[in-house]
Amino acid sequence: MISPSALVGGQQPKLLGVSPNVNSPAKTASPFQLDTTTNTPAATPAPAKLQADTVVGALASIAQVLTLLATKTTGTPLINANAAGSGPALLTNGGVPSTFNTTTDPSQKTRLDGTLAKVANDPEGSVLLQKAIAKGYTIEVGDPNAAGVAQADLDEEADAGGQVNGLTLPDKKKIIINPNAPDFDKTVVHELVHAASDGDGNSQQEEGFADVIGFRVYNRIDGVAPPGSEQSIFNAKIQSYPNLQATNGILDTLAQLGLKGFSA
Ligand SMILES: [Zn+2]
Image (cartoon, protein in one colour):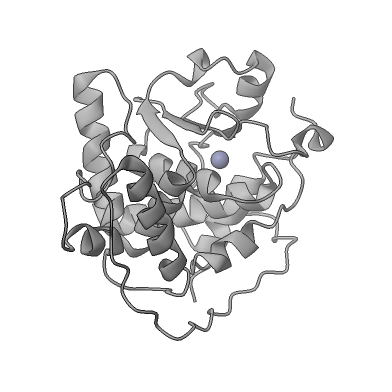
């Protein structure tokens, strides 16, 4: 079991256990006071000019683009728009650096590349993806149980069938996606929310909104209807994490990225 106090410090693994009964109607109202107002965009800055002769340059450019993205709430697939700018082509897979996906199995690597290309073309997915990349994360399809995480932590986060579908390791800046995750693309987005988080460790609120945004993007990129309202998704998810702290500032992180906790 992960004790709430052990989560302070931001070094705890963040694990996704998708409950198969996520469709069940929520029975408990959210204890959180949620700000659902839209951010007021700042004046639109000039387009970023990419100068990406080196990997360092590419990352600096991504960080620059990310700063610009922080003022946007909706829009076109920005990662592609920038990749299409002048200069040498440095980004592949729909705008994702080829070094981001470190999956070793060829077929699974191709599968994940396909997911990342779709996420990169989604307004909210693109923002999350770019933040994870800017923070130095990598992602792979693999076995979460082989990640060196304590069994007790895996047990804590496993779904009702005992399976851990995704895992984000802030200390290693690594995301691992279980190839058998039932909602593979949604799981990728869920973990990207964890990777993008600047909050203190994990929280019920972060888990809830990771699923809310995960299903929201999943619906857009794959046409899969969400299992219920965003509030019901949130409520169902946080019930799986009774031992996490209630919040860790994830809404601030989302707001800074121009993302909404709950859609209007
Ligand atoms: Zn999670």
